[in-house]
Image (cartoon, rainbow, N blue to C red; front, side, top):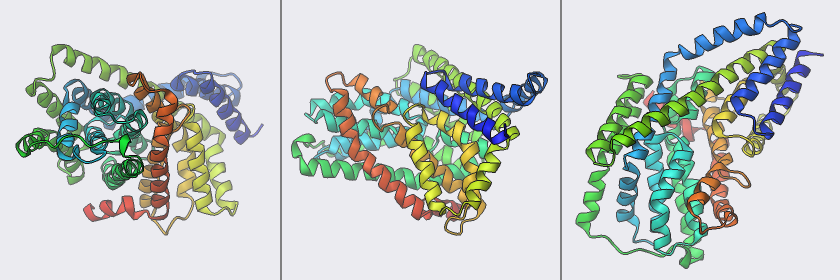
Length: 442
């Protein structure tokens, strides 16, 4: 049996384990263990030596400290009631337009994503805040749930983003450059969702009726109330890319600032602080377990030479690079049916990354290609969170909207998926959408 055959068999067994709902970290660990035992004919010394070194190397990586800090920042924002302030500010500004509260929910999701970094947390938190208001103002269940399920995906696209940090760690890419590259696509995503809402309420005015106009003084006070949240975002992003703070330091400042703002606003009590800390610990442990499993699997696949041989085969096959890229995008969409965004990034990047870097796209340099592919992959992974039948955000929102059938939520998100696919096409054929800001600020 060749190394490539062994790698493909192990990958197939891994997918079967995921289908029967074995945890992704455990599944990757078992698949990697099988490869090591087959190659070394049952000898466990190489496996144990590699595992010992990988665990130490991964958990002693200073850059990874940014993950629990960004998670803690999101926990403070969630438990501290900052989501309510964001939705209220957006609602007072544009809620009096037809579909205005749906616009406000999308804008609030984008703003909350800028201090959260998690799609599921964004969808769950903004769903609890915005959904009652949307339903109270007689928004259709389809539009209300579809907007919030799609808007939740902005949590991983608007920086800071935990999947982007993982991508940076796996590819040795700059976290700061990836964050900057995600800004314009994130804004375009939010505007695209608003355009979808506009089309829906134009075709069916009853789906999103206008709410009453808020007095100017109240509107201004609501905007002033979210200035500290916007300041946290600017400190984190400008701090990282401006060079006066590395990602870990900027995340520390952001987490501390979010905590202070949440306490000062009166939205966070002692029990909320405890919940935030425990939630951060649980999420961090899960992510690190998956990281270790992915490291061991990547090491095992490197022994089989499967990623290298696959990259060489694709490069020498004569297939157009764009066709290869769209094949990868199709695989991501299918994988979204069985795993979450973090798992997809960890499992596929070691295989797809060398393939993409070995191909020619628009005359880009290796660094530009690396950043561009990271944003493309992130946007496709984002689709997996909402596309039927098993998009995680659909179930999160549907659990909150008990009066809306899951079928209605799935139908409601389809127009937003169309916007996602258009945005991906634009990014594939027009890389400056994400690279321009990186070059300007660099």
